[in-house]
Length: 131
Image (cartoon, rainbow, N blue to C red; front, side, top):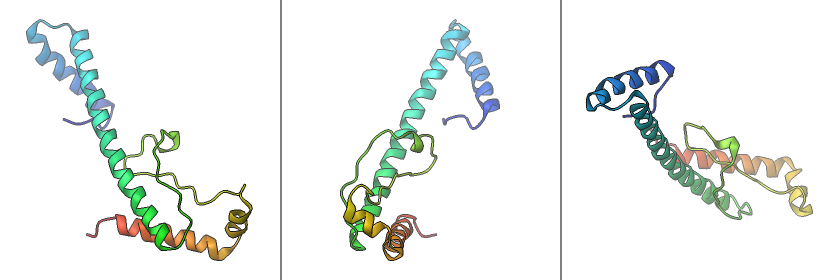
């Protein structure tokens, strides 16, 4: 019971579901609609799990940013297209605003850029479970 891995797997699922669903005198269209509904439910479940994992990941990155002394604002959720379809926990990180002069000045230095990178690396390493 999972989302199809490729087009052939989906075709096979549709065929098999029609064979099993046809016994109850259901039309091909009715069985296909039920299969599509199941796909939608499975997709929602997978998306919810990914959102939960992504929030955990974002919170770890946030804590590590604070540990490194970076001016952290908040963790928030929004439907960014750039994150859609990722098969792993994913976050969009804003590490400063060039429109704020004090931040722009810090962002222009190699030392501050390295501090940001080190913060992200330490958060990623802390999030990934050891093998």
